[in-house]
Image (tube, rainbow, N blue to C red):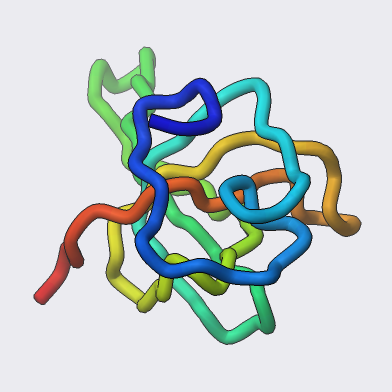
Length: 109
């Protein structure tokens, strides 16, 4: 267990300064589970999660999705479709304030 969260430290080592396991980045705040939607950026991923919102007028549920950019440490080896947990950290860029801390098995294979 590392970081004060219930996550395992990856087996691989990396020299990324913004890695919460092998660098100096500290995590705090909320954690979010989602699916990796895009790995096109360098050292970053876009994590997407779907949730339901009630529409009182029609007494139904409506699906919504949010996309959160997050820092991807080199030691995790992420691919599109992976189910990941991201944790809040200090702002790393204009849009990135989260970092990936754990990876589950791929979701859509």
